[in-house]
Amino acid sequence: MITIENLTKFYGKNRAVNDISFTIKDNEILGFLGPNGAGKSTTMNMIAGYLPMSDGKVTINGVDIAAEPVKAKMDIGYLPEIPPVYPDMKVKEYLDFCAGLKSIKGKKKKDEIERVMTLLKVKDVQNKLIRNLSKGYKQRVGFAQALLGNPKFLILDEPTVGLDPNQVVEVRNIIKDLKKEHSVIFSSHILSEVSAVCDRVVIINKGDIRAIDTIENLEKPLRDTRILHVKVAGSKATAAAVIGVTKGVKEITEVVDEGNNITSFTVQLDGDADEIRDTLIAECLKNQVSILEIYADKPDLEKVFVELINRPVKKTSLKDLMDEYITEEKSDDDKAEEEKEED
Image 1 (cartoon, rainbow, N blue to C red):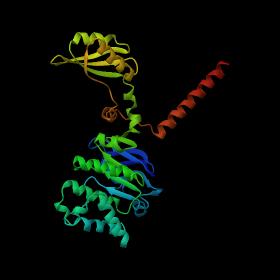
Image 2: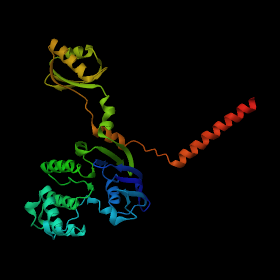
Image 3: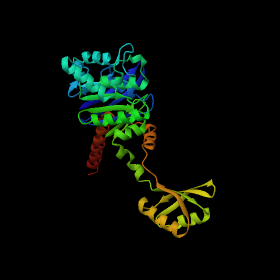
Image 4: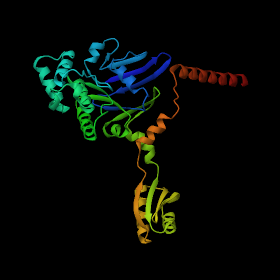
């Protein structure tokens, strides 16, 4: 397990990361999500031991990375946002060099290099200079070095940047497979990417954590929104009359004339969307209203994300809680004293 406690980073007077705490569990994929400039890369650099923290503590499998950096880093594979590749080296030569840095020797080194080249599909360019590779291949080579030595924890900062759609899918599948033997934290500002592979997400903005939860729980409030979108062809007045009196329809909240005798309705419901949708379809068919499209509002991580990053942060320190406790205790004592005087 990786434990991050009260992690803080100042650049001069600017606080880039503000007293954040969370954990990464064994065999978990944790998404680190936030807009550009939110503090994602700074946090991941500190977790990896690449950047010193201003305050706080990072523990890798029980080892404090500040107190015992060499021991802690033996359990870490790290892919920074910009892959740490040397352009004048060939791919296999570079991986051999990285394996040496990780103290991988002999036959194990050869086997590890073959394993990661096969996994990341860079064997076909193993004898090419890195400077001559595409951005996508450079990203793959950087990912391969992070996997050398089969470290327990993988820290991946924007691992799919520069990859084409096919490569993105491949890397996502690799990350999912890595969960069997590894814990993974990876950052991204691409919501669909995080939603596709993560067990939990941490949402950060301006150095503050806005949420830590599963995607399902974050989206749950949106599942309670009972909205149907209905697109019909034909008479707008007839469609509105049929929709408006259908059992379970609370009100029509929006009507959009799309031209060519096509109208879209947004309908607020008073019950389960699936049941009311079936009833509405039956009523429209009975009244010869042609439905072109009908669907319920779906959970949308993007809406959750926008809401959370714009929500004001309110932090309560231990001192604040203690002061509040003492004040409450005093109030209770005052009341007791007043009652005693009245008696």
